[in-house]
Length: 196
Image 1: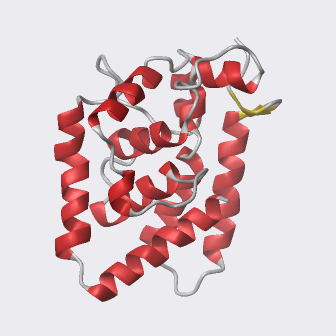
Image 2: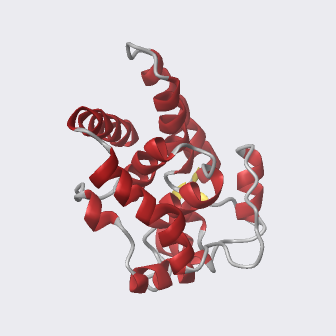
């Protein structure tokens, strides 16, 4: 099977590693050194386009017929990262990881608008069902990641809400003081800028 591509003729693995390397070099120039920011930014670079690993996106990329509802990749990439690959990351860093990946091709939306509604979750699950196998699993291996796969790629809607969305919303609205929020939004925008 042909490589999964990020852009015509560019293997997705090569694109993700190049983005990570560019971000890593940028982070080394930032004073002061914040290991959590470095790790989160590097993971954003490696994971921002994972959702391009679907049959509909690859068809769209090569100008073949594809359902336009199944070709967007950013939010699927974000969910795969926070639900599986960065699952052990502290919530303080998982939220900017999710938001930066989910919005890397759009105008940044307020936090509350980025949270997934049930009908959108159903569409994300449908997109995830089109992940190209075994190429997607091989891509994860090449990135030194293993994704636990037991049946569905995405959790049921309510499970994701309980494990990520509600705690993230609580963190943002009730647990952060103004100084913490400023640092959070600085980190978020820095990561988002590095993905551009």
